[in-house]
Length: 66
Image 1: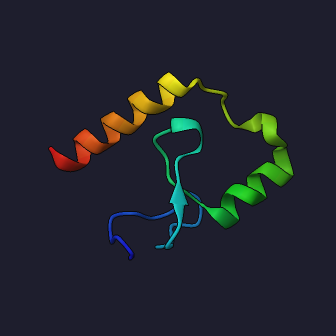
Image 2: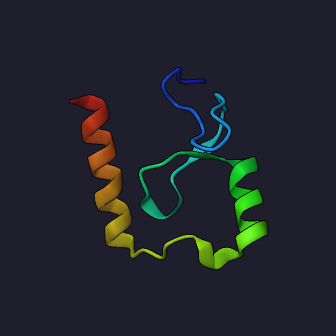
């Protein structure tokens, strides 16, 4: 299922699979995320704890529902 308001922040395309790495706010498609990781290494993505991830997920869900 595609959501019209969900686009990759890098390629600006509607993709079926988007993610917020480590609970961030920006959405990345799998291709762009892989390209960034390949170019900059795994250390590019900000490390976060499970608690930070859950808090970010809740905020995102509240924005979507509210």
